[in-house]
Image (cartoon, rainbow, N blue to C red; front, side):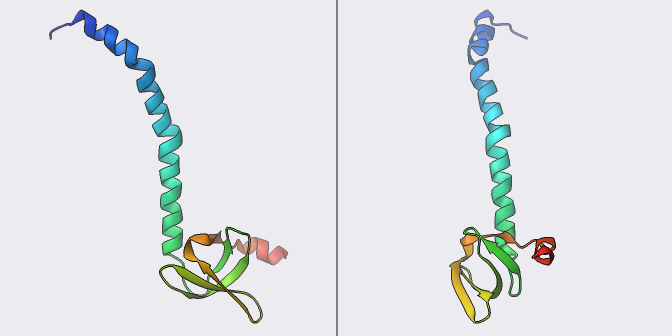
Length: 99
């Protein structure tokens, strides 16, 4: 193996930058990508009859659904049309029992 004396010094100069990139990847980029994938799976799994919560905090049951639009029933005779991306998640069944 050929040893280049200047090479190790050059690598040591870039070591802090390399460490920062690795930290950025493992603590910021990867978790964000994982959350986005989970959200996409949740949005893809929506179906008629699911009880959901919107980003704005509205609770309702899905009446109909298309690629971009979801119609939810918020109360008796009250149906709201929202964007599919505005769905934050499913309602927690235990919270419904407490209400």
